[in-house]
Length: 191
Image (cartoon, rainbow, N blue to C red; front, side, top):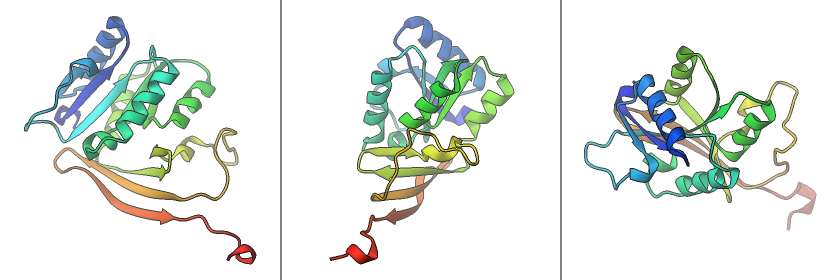
């Protein structure tokens, strides 16, 4: 399945770029390119593009990258799986990257079979995205354990949409369902 996809590698240093390019090739991506060499695309462009982000990029740069990609006019980019890789470490680092809006956060080293499974799960399965005035990305509650709520999660009543995204190597990326939730004043306080 990944053989029909393109991996765009995002890293600050040549070593990190080479490391992720080798990993992407090992996982079977059909095309592997560096983010700094990407051109406008072509007619034979794969319908699903992954962005693989190395851990050596600063948090601010990761946030800028996510913001830039999520406002693209191209659904192929706006709803692309954006995966970041971290060295094995504290769970707080993983949760912080989930809060940023990455589709998956993978701690390395990881078993090749599990890594391949996590990457391919981004294709052919419905993905739940949340859209607010300042966020578009995967539902950030997806990693919460039962009975536990991440302390950094936003609370309250606010306008948002829940999007069901489907990625297919044959049909591309589509929003298959959009549910709009508008905030409302309590019944006793309505004008």
